Amino acid sequence: MEIQRNACLLCGGVRATTLLEKEGARYVQCHDCGLVYSNPVPDEQTLKEVAEDWARKHHASRERLEWEKQTAIGEMLFGPRMKIINRYRRSGKLLDVGCSTGFFLEYAASHGWEVSGNELAHYTAAMARERLHVEIREGSFLDAGFTGGFDVVTMWDVIEHATEPVKFLTEAFRVLRRGGLLVLTTPNYGSLSRRVLGDKWEAVSPPRHLVVFTPRTLREMVSRAGGRVERIRSVDVNPLELWAGLTGRKVGFEERQKGISMVKGIFSRFPALSYMRHIVNIILTISNLGDVIELYAERVG
Image 1 (cartoon, rainbow, N blue to C red):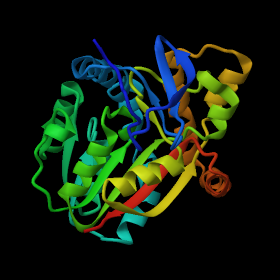
Image 2 (image 1 turned 135 degrees about the vertical axis):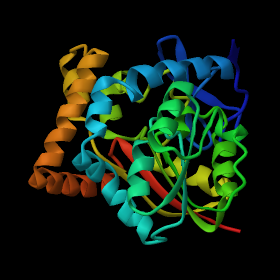
Image 3 (image 1 turned 180 degrees about the vertical axis):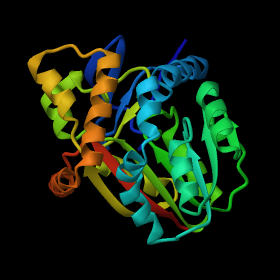
């Protein structure tokens, strides 16, 4: 079953233009605020089944689990973000929403944080629980019932999957202590990759990705949910995706996973390349053309 959206998820506007149709789904853009979202959307049971399938094929794939074991990969992915988090607080209670197999939770725990997680998919929630022996609440974050008092809440590529993203963000700020920090990443609809590839862009991915933000629309939504944005930037470009899209080459799932693992492995082994990535990310942030939006926001009130 599908659910029709009669108003914009951000501003409540009722006028929207169809941007594209892909794999039977339609993405529209609000006339008033510019938010891009799919309409209609699958019901919650269908989305749960999609999440379960994706967890098995992607988050718990053999290739991903292999590179998650590499200390250098974790440091490359999470080290810069943890340095920014440490500017606000160096230890405390951290909740990772959409924690998957617990890769980031393991990294945070090794840096002194008391960690908990939430994961929609049973398959990866069970893996994280067995792997870390910490509290992992399974199911929707809106129904998880966390009591609050967290110093940091993280959401790595999660908010784009939410049918009600404002409620999702509001709940994140509710469980944070006053002055606590929300950190999230999500695909950037204004990215260079999307401008070049159009509907071939991977982040336009129905029925998993229900909302696709720009830095401006994400900043506005976070503000409406009760947060004060402290830092926002757009980073990274996937060269494999650009190459495949521009050449018209069809890249299968397993091939793409191996390619991503290879690129991350190269960056982790050669520090000079990581420095080049840092310079490129500065340019992408200035131009708002990075594939990924990275946002840090404090709870106010």
